Amino acid sequence: MRLLIIRLLLLVFLIPPELSSYGSKADKGSVVDTASYISPFFDDNERCFRCHGQEKYEYANESLGRQVNALMCSDRIMDRNEFYGSNHRSFSCTDCHSTEYVNFPHPGELRMELKYNCLDCHGGDETFSSFSFEEIEADYRQSTHFKLEEEGFTCWKCHDPHSYKINIRDSKNLKETILYDNTICLNCHSDFSRFQLLTAREEINILEKHEWLPNQASHFSSVRCIECHTRINDSILVSHLILPKEEAVRRCNECHSKNSLLMASLYKFQSREQRSDGFLNGIMLNESYVIGANRNVYLNSISIALFAVVSLIMIVHIVFRLIRK
Amino acid sequence: MYLYPVWVRLWHVVNAILVIILIITGISMQYTDKENYALIVNFASAVKWHNIAASILTISFIFFVIMNMRTENGKYYRLNKKNFFSDLGKQFRYYSFGIFRHEKPPFPVSLERKFNPLQKFSYVLAMYVAMPLLIISGLGLMFPEVTINKVFGVSGLILTDILHITMGFFISVFLLIHIYTCTLGSRPSSLFRGIITGYHESDEQ
View 1 (cartoon, each protein chain N blue to C red):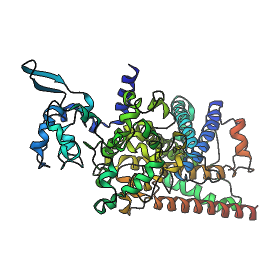
View 2 (cartoon, rainbow over the protein chains, first blue to last red):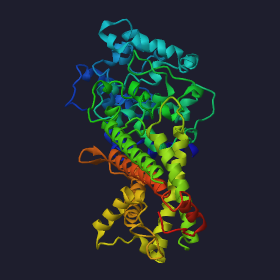
View 3 (spheres, each protein chain N blue to C red):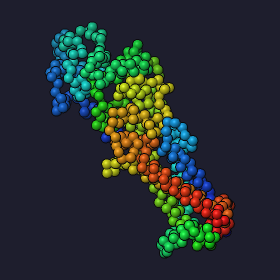
View 4 (tube, rainbow over the protein chains, first blue to last red):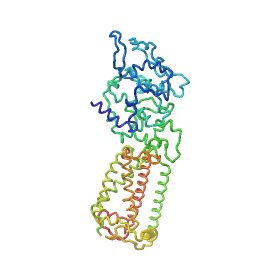
């Protein structure tokens, strides 16, 4: 019950109204968005999705001599829409999984199948050099997540290869990107059933832990968790060095200042564009407004000049009063 | 001459303290940086104290408006349309030249006229124009979820904040001028003493 309440609160805080249908059951399901992409392996993949594409599947049980309906284990369900919208959408399921999976019932030993890691495909490949996978790997190896590898932490825990899509690089809607990225963190950090698979720590109440943060809901919908919980690396777009909680950013001035760290993290990719309407870090203003980071230089100059003029008039007045005393 | 009743003096001192806190914390938020500077309060404390002071100031402002409606004090804030500009001119001329020639003030303080025309005009602007705009825009910043997202394509929060800091700036300038003009009594300290004791010492200012 407590977990349910926490999840409901997180949903209320994290999901802006216009995005409240994002990822809902209604937009999941069997309808494939063929308008945007048609996989050359659609028919091949459909052999897998027929059972793994939804909760219910049916198979012919030869012993019983009839069709049997069964429920698919939740972590074996792959959403077609998410897959065909993901970065790996052009893949056939058997590019990564054993071709023996085409047989049903699947051979039992396939459960022990070794899974590829990101670097297995992306490492040392010039095609992906702009993504700096090796740098990401080096960052990850210093992060707190890497310490959990013994317990089974892998790149997949955050970047499910069946659904992951690059967001920030070509984001048209930053709020949606923030929600997408934060959902990756919350998948484990607000879901104790997944969280406890990797650690013996007690359940975390994200809202309570961030109670110190003023305007919590605004922060949660305007910045990503990684803004405060990673160390910025200038050579990669998204830092992967997740810091221990004690080292997370807690000083407001890190973002609310002229040299806001958001320009080196959340707005790193967009910061190449510049707005010339007199605001510091103006690119943020397309999506948000950050007190202290978005000062208007014209207003600042005018106010300082006015203050100086008023002060000067008063000084002259005082001098004349003293002379004419 | 007993000019400042207890409630005015109490309201004034509370208002003064709150406005000073709000100016310091407001400037701290606006000019916050990674390095610490003198008089710049750290951002988290600035936000906390700005919100607390602003909430009390809002209550204090409502109290001021209600009391002005229910007591005689309200009459001092009614602008006189007749000779409005010429009266402002006379007072301005006095502050600019007459005061140095030891001329008599054109609008001496009396029970019927607590403020000279320039004072009255600036107080009305500060208390009945700038303060309500400050409070409304401040509420919009304190509860950003109620602020309109976009106004003609510009973020509602930016417009609200620009209005807020502009009004805050005017109040800061007002405070500076207000403190200075309060040294223009018969003696530099007499008007300050008046707002503490309630008694106006002289018709000079």
